[in-house]
Length: 232
Ligand SMILES: [Zn+2]
Image (cartoon, rainbow, N blue to C red; front, side, top):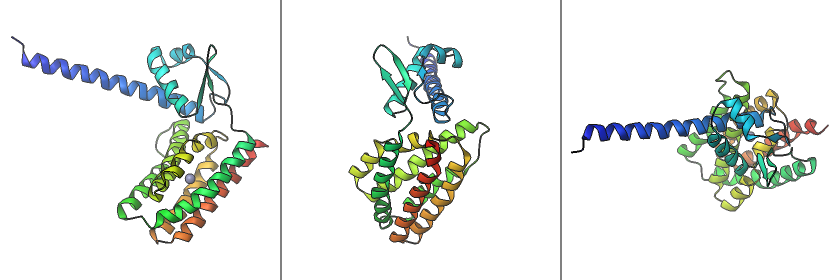
């Protein structure tokens, strides 16, 4: 006869193992992501699975999983027979095109989103912006990479509320925030953006559509100007 206690214990143990495996893969991913964002792994450089296996003291599986996920995010490029590389740095031309695209789409979307914002949505935006302001954690690289991700979430939420999925997808596919934050690993990139996000939120809270468009335009123009020295 089957011992019910034993069955429960076995299930608990196997689900525990899955959880551990998941969080290990997640931790490995976060660590490589932080190294890519902070340029510890320089753009265009080779990434060897064996080196990462040694560095993190884990098996090949979580490393390959992490690299596959990073490939999907445009941060890692896999070439047949050669292997993985960090994605090359964005070119000046591409950068200009990206900001032209953002300036065409995001201020108009911010204006459009204003009309759809209720308290719940406003709270979601405030939370997305608020997470970025928190200076938790000692690891500066991790903080920087988290900031980049949160900035992507904040902007994407505004696109979601503007209710044009095509515009949202178009911007998402550029992986804008991952590319631009790799241009410069510097606190100025993050500190000033926080105030600009506050200005956007203030216009949203006031129901001021044209104010939201203006604040978004200013934020994107300033972001561009902060990053331009990376090309000098
Ligand atoms: Zn932003």
